[in-house]
Image 1: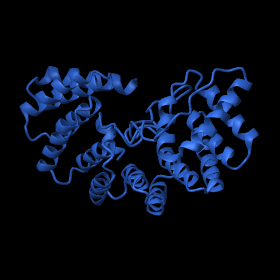
Image 2: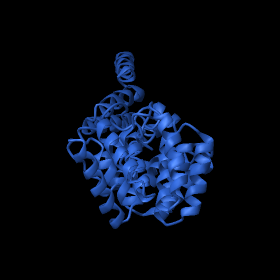
Image 3: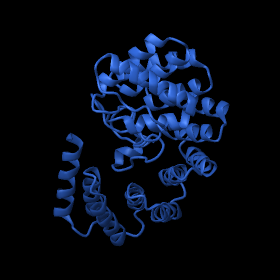
Length: 317
């Protein structure tokens, strides 16, 4: 909220100084974007481009608004215009990769993430995105190597740790997955998704009681089920249908035993993470996008929608 107020004040100051300056329109578009008023943000970013057709960042943020509205063709055009103006604008390469990932064109997504990494090789967010795209192509060993590199680049990035734990679990390396989740729990102790995945891992290890405890804790941290969509995304990417059915029964049993409402552990792909923190919300994202100031909010939508709204979003890549 403090950042939003600062940005709003900056936009007002820039507009007062010179309404013809593209930065004024750009900052105002950022304000509306942060308020989720994407149609209005599009008008301001478009105006910034009209005033200065060489404004690279305006093309990228305009593309992000189109992604939120699922107008992917328009988003691709904007990202490509940004690349045309600056071939080293790695955020645009990353954005194109995000679109391809959403369209399940994982090979093309990986190629664009790799291009972005050649420009910014130390970005843990880019490495994390590429690792998830590799896993989607069943390149499990490559994905784990990439995610390990991402964690080495940023040891406190919970998004990378969560993905690596998910892949380890999907590869039947449950004890390693559990170790990763225990470490992750130290970083984000009130993240319901961590307990949710720990419950699944404990179930696979045959520790039914511990599985039920973790499912119950996940529900306590997310009593309104705000993370159900995210859980569905994780299951979709990392869990087989049979495993999902078993986990759902265990979760329901655990929560019923506590007298609480059950939550759906449906089909979940780690690409739809929320980018808020605190009780009832997800600290895991975000990327990607995404996504900006909190540890896991570096990408909004764990691999689907990177949050490149504010300038600081770019710094997280």
